[in-house]
Length: 170
Image 1 (cartoon, one colour):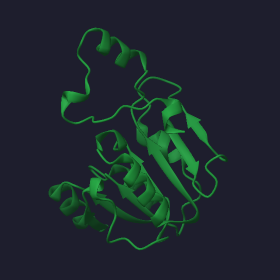
Image 2 (cartoon, rainbow, N blue to C red; image 1 turned 90 degrees about the vertical axis):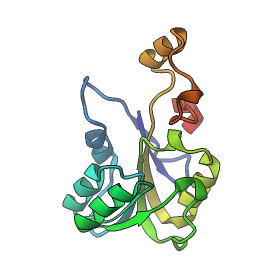
Image 3 (spheres, rainbow, N blue to C red; image 1 turned 180 degrees about the vertical axis):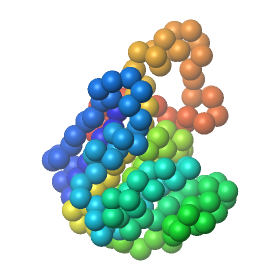
């Protein structure tokens, strides 16, 4: 599930997009959630391999790439992005208030220990009227329920520290 939230008024403009068919890639879903990004300053937090950053740049956005992995950051820099190595659990201390029109966080929030702190930082660095595209695995998805019943899913897996449901994100 992916959610787009207007942080200027979180009660408005909330859209949920569920994959309408098996195999629909999360980047395609996220791209559909984006408003017009031409000329907008966007930062992708937890950018991984840079696929979404490249898609947004193709759409005309001025994209900053951020990730914890030094190799991902180096690859993004070689690909022409302004690239930052950031530990998102520490927030965004070197990023000025209201410096981005949009923030994209795909499949990253569940890896954070300090979720509330990070979301307050997201709010701080977004310009008024800015957007956040956030996706996370749906904890109550049937596959995850079956893994729980079989004893194969726990918070101790070492990489998912927190699980979310659609209502817990709102």
